[in-house]
Image (cartoon, rainbow, N blue to C red; front, top):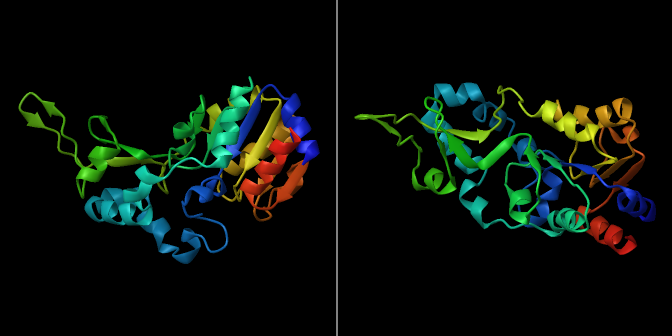
Length: 246
């Protein structure tokens, strides 16, 4: 813990990768670790696909709101891990965050630079005209539609949530690598590093940029050997110990 604390204390720019484990202390279920939601029902990947949205948009929205417990999103609040990353910024460090999470909690916590690698649950966009709608509009309608009017014509297309569905392209990877290019250290928190191409980012940091690398996750990952420091433990408790050492 002291070595990790020293590494973070010396760094001016800390690139952070975060996954579902960062949000579990806020009450949000872990989707991919043992016993997570995706493990419980593999068919969810089929229903949360771009193909299913285009073929069955009304049923898609019903399942989407159920699977992601969308009605609860507005009630979740940042936890101690989110607060720690914000505190690093308050201490004068640059702490860009590249997150797999779609819950918007890093933004709620006040972090200045966030790349939502897989998008966000808090907004949805019209596939036809590109108008974006906020969380309240999504929740007001069982199947949210576009209300934009062109002259006398109402768009009325069914909105697509602003998350990366299975089958959608990843558009943020180059931006994520650009952040790592400028970093002094890579800090990876609460992710199984299972999903591609997100899980290539630690390889990039280690082999292309030769950065010091830190992984803190509840369980081992297939990428553990890439990291200089690895901790398998409760993330909140580990962060508390690191803060004490800083």
